[in-house]
Amino acid sequence: MSTVGAIVEIEGVNKIYGTNHVVKDLNLTVEEGEFLTLLGSSGCGKTTTLRMIAGFEEPTSGSIKVEGEAIGDKEPFERNVNTVFQSYALFPHKTIYDNVAYGLKMKKVPKAEIKKRVTEMLALVQLEGFEKRYPSQLSGGQKQRVAIARALINRPRVLLLDEPLGALDLKLRKQMQLELKRLQRKLNITFIYVTHDQEEALTMSDRIAIMHDGVLDQLGTPSEIYENPKTRFVATFIGETNTFDGCIRSIDGEHVSVMIENGNICGCGKGFALNEYITVSVRPEKMKYSETPIDGFTIKAIVKDYVYVGSVIKCIVSLPNGNEIKIERLSGEELPKPGSRVYIYWEEKDAVLIHNQDQLIFQAVDSIPLG
Image (cartoon, rainbow, N blue to C red; front, side, top):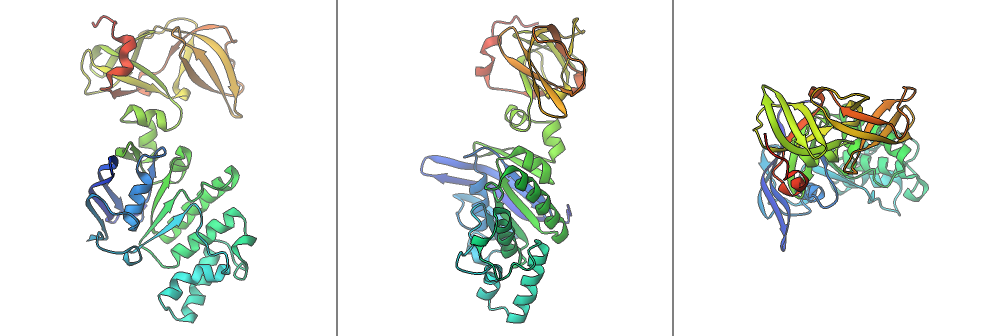
């Protein structure tokens, strides 16, 4: 990623449809040459945000700037951005050459220049020799490459991609993820990418902006998002995790002891208060088990089942309240048999402590005496 300055600035943007507040007070800066992904579940506001940048939707309030210039009064074709859609949006009656050249022809670029640039673009997306074919003669992956070439040939400063790989099968989608990242690095064009696929976002992005219910929940690098989620939603949305809701029983420096419904657990953190309700998040690969209690941990569990997923095995254990948690181990490791009783624990540094104001999820621990 080349961070030489902001290229897209979204300031206090809201989008309201009737009584539906789709995007809420969004503030986001995208750096030049960055691959930024807007990630979230369906209806979170990510595609609406993309469409407002493109000019297909107008913000209800707030401003959007590209290269320091407000673009609210500009038509989509006047903005130095291009969009790639999941549906490809190719002209079925035009050849691949004419599909890719379409934008240049509309701008009345000389024919010699059009031919040169179309040839360069098709080579860039590895479709040399496809000039005379029609979209119906191409695979899904090839159609997506044509759509990308058609968008890139206009040399936009920002390329917007709205779930462009969603219609592809898993193997081809993974291949295209690598190709898109290669293209972005080679051209050093800012990509703003929309997806609901967490793995896709982690694989491709320089930074990820996670949206939830119209709000930007967290912005950070893939490793920051995965290793240090700031909200309960982010912790559970990105990858797999085990969550424990409870109340802080004691604090000693960064050592935090938490009482939950099934016993006591520990973690490390700053800025927490005694008797505060929090959520503790621990990834399956960080979980451990023992036949005897570990200092600070009193969670008893029963090994229920195993799931083999190639290089790792997921151990499913059941807590006294019926909740299940997952422990991940490398294939070949010796594991306790189903039905075995174990104690669950982890290294304190591997637990993420999250402030949580949602009292509803703590009904099960409301009767716990506070220390």
